[in-house]
Each structure stands twice: as structure tokens, then as C-alpha cells.
Length: 246
Image 1: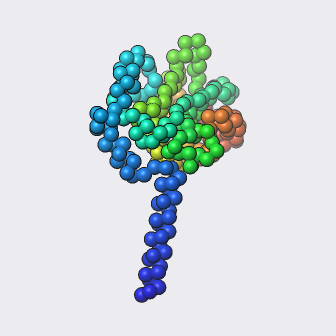
Image 2: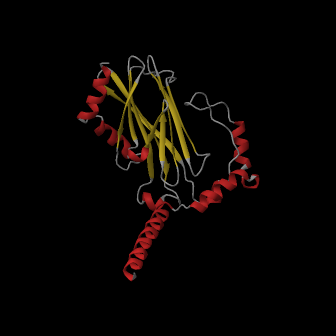
């Protein structure tokens, strides 16, 4: 009986340490989530100045599948000073034979909630999309758009779109302080914990093919070199070239 009790104590200790490690890694807890949800409904916690500024913003135009809504939100620092330091988006274009690969990504800067996990990194890419397209507009720039929003702090959401000759690719991705991240691309759901890089190859018949890549930890600086290396890998070249023929 003593042996069984000792084994149970050991198992409980291991579980307890595991939970504690996860909490410390992200500087986030269930109590903070509940506090945030309470603040969303409590008008005394809202950032009224930011809300008024958001109401006065002009129409941002077409930036993806959702119209940008204006909601009152709690003051960011209620979750701790330095809990928000910024979000951003970076992208580029890469030639591939008769087509062009368009890359876009979303990142969150290191803050008090994620600093233990990010360590020396200044920010973290939580989503990257690479789409092959046959149409590029370098004059009016109206064939693509993207936007990342911090108003769900400490959750962050980005979205965008790109048009081809016969299709439109809409995408949306979000990350939580629990370090969970998901994306939706033309109604297909991607769990980004199994790969934050998504390749999309539009087909002539308006269908789509996708490939999810388990990419390394990326920053807004390192993603460019990574992308150049990635698109020169044989399996990536084969994925896009094979689908170009269809």
C-alpha cells in the first residue's frame, strides 16, 4: 500500500510541475483569462480614448474576409504593464517560372506574457502563408491586402486576401497567450501548432491545394531567408510545379 501511495504522489508531483512549467513559460494563467473576460463586459475597464479614435477612423477598405469592427476593449495594461508591445505583418514576392509566390506573415512582439518563451527573440511569427499567383498589380496594389489587429489583446488576429485571374484566396489567423494558433483559408481550418507555414496552390478549375510545413521558430527578420531556402527545396518546387499543370 505504501508503494502505491508513493507512486501516486510521484505522478501528482510530475503533473503539478508540468502545469507550473507551462504557466511560467507563457506568464499566463486561467485566472488571467477569466479576468480578461470579466473586463470585456465591464465598461469601467474600457479604453474610451482608443474606442473613440477607432470610431473616427476612416474605412480601411478591403483587407480580408471580415469587415473590421469597432468594439470597446479593456485597457491593455490591466493585464500587466508591458503585456502589449506591438504586432505586425511582413511579406514579399518571389519569382517561380511563369508564376509568382506571394508571402505574408503575422507576428507578435516580445512582451511580459510571452517573454519567457521567446527568450532572446524580439518577436514571433505565428502564421505564414505562401500563395502561387498568376496576377500581380504593381501599380494600383488592389489585388492583395492584409491587416493585423491588437484589439483582442491578449489574443491577436490577422487577415488578408490575394486575387488570382480566376480566384480569390481569403485567410485569417489568430494566436492566444496560451500559445495556441489557428488559421482559416477559404473555409479550411489549420491548427498552426502543427506547422505555422501554409502553402496554397490555386487551380485553373478554382479548386485549391494546400501543404502545411512545420517551420522553425521565426522572427520578422529571419522569415525572409527562411522563405528563400524553403521555396528552393525540391518538395516545395514539386508541389507548386505539379499543381501549375492542372
